Length: 120
Image 1 (spheres, rainbow, N blue to C red):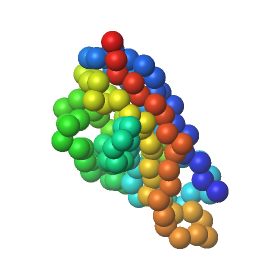
Image 2: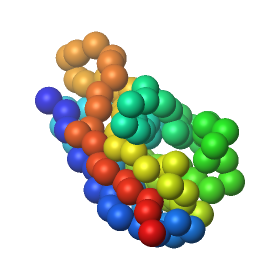
Image 3: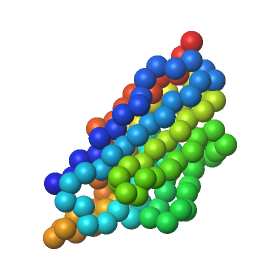
Image 4: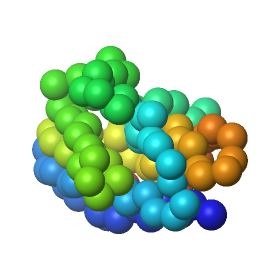
């Protein structure tokens, strides 16, 4: 019914940059918010950044000033530009969308995850 396809992860040196993308497709009526979560080994999944159907954004404190979230509303795509990456940013990054499908209830949907590794 809906797919969230992520891309852009990989291996980068400390101080480097990466750009994650997540495209939502399917029988979508409306997307209310999109965001990125991450989960490092042995840790709980945490919200990294989110953006609403307007322009309101939110970031976890550890990425403020380094990461920027944006959306392409026409393409149902969300981006996460990550700069000044640190080893502690290493995690699997998951795309999330709060959306409603045609003829279905509103709900949360997840991508498959993309690995980001920050290491020299």
